[in-house]
Each structure stands twice: as C-alpha cells, then as structure tokens.
Length: 279
Ligand SMILES: [Zn+2]
Image (cartoon, rainbow, N blue to C red; front, side, top):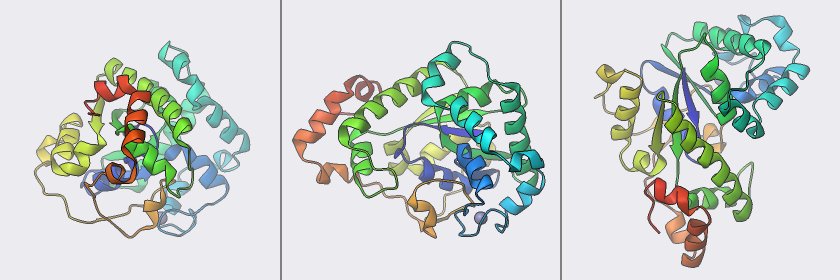
C-alpha cells in the first residue's frame, strides 16, 4: 500500500486523486475514518452511502461481521492512532494484535474489490503509518507531503470543515512536520514531497513517486489535465467536486499581509529552512 503522511491542508487529497489516475494505483481515502463511515453507513465521495457505493459495497462484503458493530473497535482505533502515541511508537512501543488483524482484513477486502496493484491510504496520521509500517503482512511505501506553513495557515483560515486559527495551526504544523521529518529520515520507505513542487510540476513529482514505488516503467504517460474523484472515505470538500484542477498559484502570497507572512515563517523557521522555503 501507499500511505500519505503530513499535516492537514497540505494537498494530500489532491495528490491522492492525481495518483488514482495511474493504472496501478487505487485511492481509498482517509482510512482512519473507515470504521466510523462503516458503522454509520456514511456517504462515499460519489454521494452514495457505503452499502450502495459500487466500490465500497463490494469491499464490505469481504469483511467480517463483528467489525460491522464497531463502537469499541472505533474507540480502540482512535486511541491507537492518536498523535500523542507517535513518540512511543518511534521508541518501539508495540501495537495490539487485534489492531493489526483488523487492518489487514480491511485492506485485504479492499484489495480484492479493486483490480489495481497498489492501495492508497491518505489518512495523513503519522501514528497510523508507524503501526501499519510494523504490520508484517503489508508492503508499505510512505509519501510525506510538506507545504509552506503560510499556505497551510491560509487554507485553515478559509471556510473548511475543520477551521483553525493561526496560532493553533502553527503549533499543530510544527508538531506534525517535526515528526514527519524524523519519520522521513528514519525510514527508507518514506519519500518526502513538497506540495509546491507538485503543483508547479506534477509530472516530475509523480515520476519521483513512481520511482519510489519501483513503478518507473509505467512513468512517462502524461497526466490528464483534469481528474475525476475516486470513491473515497473522508477528505476535504474537494471530494464533492466532479473535476479537479491543479492550481500552481500560491494564494497566501496575495491574501496574507507581509508582516503575517514573516511572523508565521518565524514561528516554525527550522522547518521552513529544512524544507527550502524562503521568507
Ligand atoms: Zn462511492
């Protein structure tokens, strides 16, 4: 499987939709929300509830019924995947057997429902990556997506499902990306990608990702100008749009006053410098 890691509002939904256009990649969405979607029979991005969706209805059939009554499983999952667990997992703390078994079962059922070779999970949660990475049943490749903090602050300030103020965003951004940096250095199967490089030159970044997956022989096909949304769990409001365009413009440059740009930059300057962002 392919796992996207990083902070929210870093462009992971866009990247996951673009990668889905590849003939060997099937995007599932933010699978950490799957138990909730399943338990409440929520709507897939196609607009149908999971039991009516053409992909998910197929995948669900192959999952065990005890998983379908999921309140305690949901609680267990949320606890296991909390950000506060990241340091423990980095220091070698183990996951529960039940967690591994259920994740393997869900992913195996998804794998059966699609003909594609790779499943893509865009959950972003680093703790979830660390757990799945240790699951011996999975061959996992991570893609850590980082974005300029000013783009993230500006995006969280818009009318999104989970708005965040600038100060809260800076703290959140600093923590997640500090761990993201550590994970991308510790694990050879994690590739770091900058959101800005991706929107400026998508072909280039997609090719880098395909090399990381050892899929380089399938590179070279030009990307379509528009993408359709796969059947995804979670994701931002982009998922309800039928067509998606890649927009290389960085709106924060015109929307944020200069003094704010500088203040946010200084707030997380080590990360800005490590990732090559200029003031
Ligand atoms: Zn669907």
